[in-house]
Length: 119
Image 1 (tube, rainbow, N blue to C red):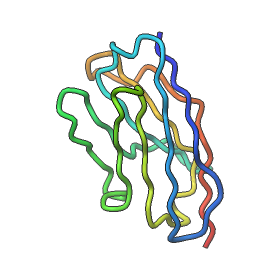
Image 2 (image 1 turned 90 degrees about the vertical axis):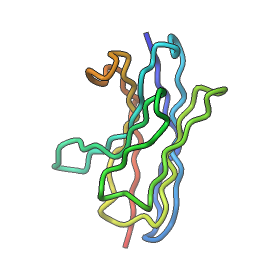
Image 3 (image 1 turned 180 degrees about the vertical axis):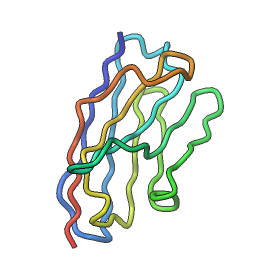
Image 4 (image 1 turned 135 degrees about the vertical axis):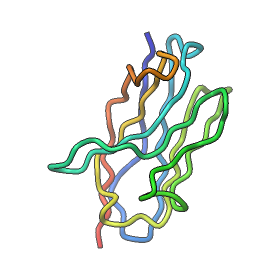
């Protein structure tokens, strides 16, 4: 079992920054990759960014490229999502996810955290 606990988020104005955290516990050594997803009201959950432990190269959705940065603190088993120049269209519930299936799919999810960007 892997547990993911998120923190961060909140209400900001357009152009502001936020940082989300996702702490991993349990059998964190089994994690192959982690990612961030988001779900806006009335929309399907969409991919934001992911990073595998083998490559350490993040892959970003085009919509956030250049504004969002995913990083990892191996010692703390925590990943972060630094979000800069936030826009109203970034408003969503953000989820971190872990894949222990060697790339076959994310099987553990954080509880979600709300990010609201006002114009």
